[in-house]
Image (cartoon, rainbow, N blue to C red; front, side, top):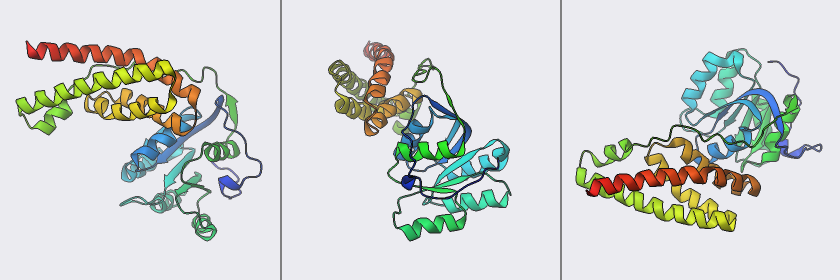
Length: 274
Protein backbone atom coordinates (compact mmCIF):
# COMPACT_ATOMS: atom_id res chain seq x y z
CA UNK A 1 0.00 0.00 0.00
CA UNK A 2 1.44 3.35 -1.03
CA UNK A 3 -0.31 6.55 -0.02
CA UNK A 4 0.62 10.23 0.00
CA UNK A 5 1.03 11.53 3.53
CA UNK A 6 1.05 14.95 5.11
CA UNK A 7 2.27 14.34 8.67
CA UNK A 8 0.61 16.23 11.48
CA UNK A 9 -0.84 15.35 14.84
CA UNK A 10 -4.33 13.98 14.56
CA UNK A 11 -5.60 16.23 17.33
CA UNK A 12 -4.69 19.43 15.47
CA UNK A 13 -6.55 18.72 12.24
CA UNK A 14 -8.72 21.75 11.51
CA UNK A 15 -11.09 19.61 9.44
CA UNK A 16 -11.86 17.04 12.07
CA UNK A 17 -14.81 14.78 11.43
CA UNK A 18 -17.14 13.37 14.02
CA UNK A 19 -16.84 9.65 14.71
CA UNK A 20 -19.45 7.90 12.56
CA UNK A 21 -20.60 4.52 13.78
CA UNK A 22 -21.73 3.57 10.26
CA UNK A 23 -18.32 4.21 8.71
CA UNK A 24 -16.19 1.28 7.66
CA UNK A 25 -12.72 1.57 6.16
CA UNK A 26 -11.28 -1.01 3.79
CA UNK A 27 -8.16 -1.56 5.83
CA UNK A 28 -6.44 -4.40 7.66
CA UNK A 29 -5.13 -2.78 10.81
CA UNK A 30 -2.50 -3.98 13.27
CA UNK A 31 -2.44 -2.49 16.78
CA UNK A 32 0.43 -3.06 19.21
CA UNK A 33 -0.38 -2.04 22.78
CA UNK A 34 1.02 -3.88 25.80
CA UNK A 35 -1.36 -2.35 28.36
CA UNK A 36 -4.47 -4.52 28.76
CA UNK A 37 -6.90 -1.66 29.35
CA UNK A 38 -5.56 0.48 26.51
CA UNK A 39 -5.60 -2.54 24.19
CA UNK A 40 -9.27 -3.14 25.02
CA UNK A 41 -10.06 0.54 24.55
CA UNK A 42 -8.49 0.90 21.12
CA UNK A 43 -9.91 -2.47 20.04
CA UNK A 44 -13.41 -1.31 20.93
CA UNK A 45 -12.91 1.91 18.98
CA UNK A 46 -11.41 0.32 15.89
CA UNK A 47 -13.27 -2.98 15.59
CA UNK A 48 -16.45 -1.50 14.05
CA UNK A 49 -14.48 0.62 11.58
CA UNK A 50 -11.67 -1.60 10.29
CA UNK A 51 -12.15 -4.31 7.70
CA UNK A 52 -9.88 -6.55 9.79
CA UNK A 53 -8.22 -5.82 13.12
CA UNK A 54 -5.31 -7.57 14.81
CA UNK A 55 -4.45 -6.45 18.34
CA UNK A 56 -1.16 -7.57 19.89
CA UNK A 57 -0.11 -7.02 23.50
CA UNK A 58 3.22 -8.74 22.79
CA UNK A 59 5.36 -6.60 20.44
CA UNK A 60 7.60 -9.53 19.51
CA UNK A 61 4.60 -11.52 18.26
CA UNK A 62 3.43 -8.43 16.40
CA UNK A 63 6.83 -8.10 14.75
CA UNK A 64 6.67 -11.71 13.60
CA UNK A 65 3.16 -11.20 12.24
CA UNK A 66 4.28 -8.11 10.31
CA UNK A 67 7.26 -9.98 8.88
CA UNK A 68 5.01 -12.69 7.46
CA UNK A 69 1.86 -10.71 6.62
CA UNK A 70 3.15 -7.25 5.65
CA UNK A 71 1.81 -7.53 2.10
CA UNK A 72 -1.70 -7.77 3.56
CA UNK A 73 -1.40 -5.01 6.18
CA UNK A 74 -2.66 -1.49 5.47
CA UNK A 75 -2.01 0.32 8.75
CA UNK A 76 0.00 -0.15 11.95
CA UNK A 77 -0.62 1.66 15.23
CA UNK A 78 1.98 1.05 17.89
CA UNK A 79 2.63 2.23 21.40
CA UNK A 80 6.08 3.77 21.73
CA UNK A 81 7.16 2.69 25.21
CA UNK A 82 6.98 -1.09 25.57
CA UNK A 83 9.41 -3.42 27.34
CA UNK A 84 11.79 -5.28 25.06
CA UNK A 85 10.58 -4.18 21.66
CA UNK A 86 9.57 -0.53 21.40
CA UNK A 87 7.35 1.20 18.89
CA UNK A 88 10.48 2.65 17.31
CA UNK A 89 11.76 -0.92 16.82
CA UNK A 90 8.48 -1.74 15.09
CA UNK A 91 8.89 1.23 12.77
CA UNK A 92 12.53 0.38 11.97
CA UNK A 93 11.45 -3.18 11.15
CA UNK A 94 8.85 -1.89 8.70
CA UNK A 95 11.46 0.39 7.12
CA UNK A 96 13.91 -2.51 6.83
CA UNK A 97 11.28 -4.53 4.97
CA UNK A 98 11.17 -1.69 2.40
CA UNK A 99 7.41 -1.51 2.45
CA UNK A 100 5.20 1.55 2.60
CA UNK A 101 2.80 0.82 5.41
CA UNK A 102 1.78 3.90 7.41
CA UNK A 103 2.90 3.50 11.00
CA UNK A 104 1.15 5.57 13.68
CA UNK A 105 2.95 6.34 16.94
CA UNK A 106 0.93 6.15 20.16
CA UNK A 107 2.48 8.08 23.01
CA UNK A 108 1.78 9.78 26.31
CA UNK A 109 4.22 12.57 25.40
CA UNK A 110 2.65 15.96 24.76
CA UNK A 111 5.61 18.33 24.22
CA UNK A 112 5.65 19.56 20.59
CA UNK A 113 9.38 18.93 20.15
CA UNK A 114 8.99 15.34 21.33
CA UNK A 115 6.04 14.73 19.04
CA UNK A 116 8.00 16.20 16.13
CA UNK A 117 10.85 13.80 16.86
CA UNK A 118 8.55 10.88 16.07
CA UNK A 119 7.79 12.36 12.67
CA UNK A 120 11.52 12.83 12.11
CA UNK A 121 12.00 9.12 12.77
CA UNK A 122 9.50 8.25 10.06
CA UNK A 123 6.14 7.81 11.79
CA UNK A 124 3.23 8.86 9.58
CA UNK A 125 1.20 10.37 12.40
CA UNK A 126 1.18 10.63 16.17
CA UNK A 127 -1.76 9.91 18.46
CA UNK A 128 -1.48 10.96 22.08
CA UNK A 129 -2.91 9.15 25.08
CA UNK A 130 -5.46 8.91 26.54
CA UNK A 131 -7.08 7.53 23.39
CA UNK A 132 -9.57 9.77 21.69
CA UNK A 133 -12.03 8.20 19.25
CA UNK A 134 -12.02 11.35 17.13
CA UNK A 135 -8.23 11.23 16.65
CA UNK A 136 -8.37 7.61 15.50
CA UNK A 137 -11.32 8.27 13.19
CA UNK A 138 -9.49 11.22 11.65
CA UNK A 139 -6.49 9.03 10.88
CA UNK A 140 -8.62 6.42 9.14
CA UNK A 141 -10.63 9.05 7.33
CA UNK A 142 -7.52 10.71 5.93
CA UNK A 143 -5.77 7.54 4.83
CA UNK A 144 -8.62 5.38 3.53
CA UNK A 145 -11.88 5.54 1.65
CA UNK A 146 -14.90 4.91 3.83
CA UNK A 147 -18.16 3.16 3.07
CA UNK A 148 -21.45 2.83 4.86
CA UNK A 149 -21.50 -0.38 6.89
CA UNK A 150 -24.84 -2.12 7.15
CA UNK A 151 -25.82 -3.80 10.38
CA UNK A 152 -23.38 -1.96 12.59
CA UNK A 153 -24.10 -2.62 16.24
CA UNK A 154 -24.91 -6.30 16.00
CA UNK A 155 -23.02 -8.19 18.68
CA UNK A 156 -22.02 -11.78 18.14
CA UNK A 157 -22.39 -13.76 21.36
CA UNK A 158 -23.07 -17.21 19.94
CA UNK A 159 -19.60 -18.41 20.90
CA UNK A 160 -18.93 -21.66 22.73
CA UNK A 161 -20.13 -21.17 26.32
CA UNK A 162 -18.61 -24.30 27.85
CA UNK A 163 -16.65 -23.10 30.84
CA UNK A 164 -13.88 -25.02 32.55
CA UNK A 165 -11.81 -24.71 35.71
CA UNK A 166 -8.37 -25.37 34.25
CA UNK A 167 -6.93 -22.01 35.31
CA UNK A 168 -8.18 -22.53 38.86
CA UNK A 169 -6.77 -26.06 38.93
CA UNK A 170 -3.36 -24.67 37.98
CA UNK A 171 -3.51 -22.17 40.82
CA UNK A 172 -4.55 -24.75 43.42
CA UNK A 173 -1.94 -27.29 42.29
CA UNK A 174 -4.21 -30.36 42.66
CA UNK A 175 -5.33 -29.37 46.17
CA UNK A 176 -8.95 -30.47 45.80
CA UNK A 177 -10.17 -28.87 49.03
CA UNK A 178 -8.69 -25.51 48.07
CA UNK A 179 -10.00 -25.92 44.52
CA UNK A 180 -13.57 -26.47 45.70
CA UNK A 181 -13.34 -23.57 48.13
CA UNK A 182 -12.22 -21.18 45.38
CA UNK A 183 -14.81 -22.45 42.90
CA UNK A 184 -17.65 -22.07 45.42
CA UNK A 185 -16.52 -18.54 46.26
CA UNK A 186 -16.35 -17.71 42.55
CA UNK A 187 -19.89 -19.00 41.99
CA UNK A 188 -21.24 -17.10 44.99
CA UNK A 189 -19.51 -13.91 43.90
CA UNK A 190 -20.80 -14.31 40.36
CA UNK A 191 -24.36 -14.76 41.62
CA UNK A 192 -24.10 -11.55 43.62
CA UNK A 193 -22.58 -9.65 40.70
CA UNK A 194 -25.24 -10.93 38.32
CA UNK A 195 -27.95 -9.72 40.71
CA UNK A 196 -26.36 -6.25 40.62
CA UNK A 197 -25.96 -6.42 36.83
CA UNK A 198 -29.69 -7.21 36.47
CA UNK A 199 -30.67 -4.36 38.81
CA UNK A 200 -28.46 -1.74 37.16
CA UNK A 201 -29.52 -2.85 33.68
CA UNK A 202 -33.17 -2.40 34.62
CA UNK A 203 -32.33 1.04 36.06
CA UNK A 204 -30.16 1.86 33.00
CA UNK A 205 -27.49 2.99 35.46
CA UNK A 206 -24.53 3.29 33.09
CA UNK A 207 -21.77 3.88 35.63
CA UNK A 208 -22.93 1.12 37.97
CA UNK A 209 -23.18 -1.29 35.02
CA UNK A 210 -19.64 -0.43 33.99
CA UNK A 211 -18.40 -0.95 37.56
CA UNK A 212 -20.05 -4.33 38.05
CA UNK A 213 -18.92 -5.44 34.58
CA UNK A 214 -15.36 -4.65 35.64
CA UNK A 215 -15.78 -6.85 38.72
CA UNK A 216 -17.10 -9.72 36.61
CA UNK A 217 -14.29 -9.80 34.05
CA UNK A 218 -11.91 -11.80 36.22
CA UNK A 219 -14.57 -14.44 36.92
CA UNK A 220 -15.20 -15.21 33.26
CA UNK A 221 -11.53 -15.07 32.42
CA UNK A 222 -10.93 -17.66 35.16
CA UNK A 223 -13.61 -19.84 33.56
CA UNK A 224 -11.95 -19.54 30.13
CA UNK A 225 -15.02 -17.72 28.81
CA UNK A 226 -12.86 -15.16 27.10
CA UNK A 227 -15.53 -13.85 24.75
CA UNK A 228 -17.78 -13.05 27.74
CA UNK A 229 -14.90 -11.33 29.54
CA UNK A 230 -14.24 -9.23 26.44
CA UNK A 231 -17.89 -8.16 26.15
CA UNK A 232 -17.90 -7.18 29.82
CA UNK A 233 -14.78 -5.16 29.19
CA UNK A 234 -16.51 -3.56 26.19
CA UNK A 235 -19.26 -2.35 28.52
CA UNK A 236 -16.63 -0.70 30.70
CA UNK A 237 -14.97 0.85 27.65
CA UNK A 238 -18.26 2.16 26.26
CA UNK A 239 -18.79 4.00 29.54
CA UNK A 240 -15.35 5.57 29.21
CA UNK A 241 -16.17 6.61 25.63
CA UNK A 242 -19.58 7.97 26.74
CA UNK A 243 -21.35 5.55 24.37
CA UNK A 244 -24.33 4.97 26.63
CA UNK A 245 -26.65 3.45 24.03
CA UNK A 246 -23.94 1.01 22.94
CA UNK A 247 -23.27 0.13 26.58
CA UNK A 248 -26.93 -0.70 27.18
CA UNK A 249 -27.22 -2.61 23.91
CA UNK A 250 -24.26 -4.79 24.81
CA UNK A 251 -25.50 -5.36 28.35
CA UNK A 252 -29.01 -6.32 27.16
CA UNK A 253 -27.68 -8.81 24.62
CA UNK A 254 -25.17 -10.29 27.04
CA UNK A 255 -27.47 -10.62 30.05
CA UNK A 256 -29.34 -13.81 28.94
CA UNK A 257 -25.99 -15.52 28.37
CA UNK A 258 -24.80 -14.47 31.82
CA UNK A 259 -27.98 -15.94 33.33
CA UNK A 260 -27.51 -19.19 31.44
CA UNK A 261 -23.89 -19.56 32.57
CA UNK A 262 -24.87 -18.71 36.16
CA UNK A 263 -27.49 -21.48 36.14
CA UNK A 264 -24.88 -23.97 34.99
CA UNK A 265 -22.46 -22.83 37.67
CA UNK A 266 -25.12 -23.18 40.36
CA UNK A 267 -25.91 -26.68 39.06
CA UNK A 268 -22.23 -27.59 39.36
CA UNK A 269 -22.12 -26.28 42.92
CA UNK A 270 -25.24 -28.25 43.85
CA UNK A 271 -23.80 -31.44 42.39
CA UNK A 272 -20.49 -30.94 44.19
CA UNK A 273 -22.31 -30.88 47.54
CA UNK A 274 -24.21 -34.13 46.88
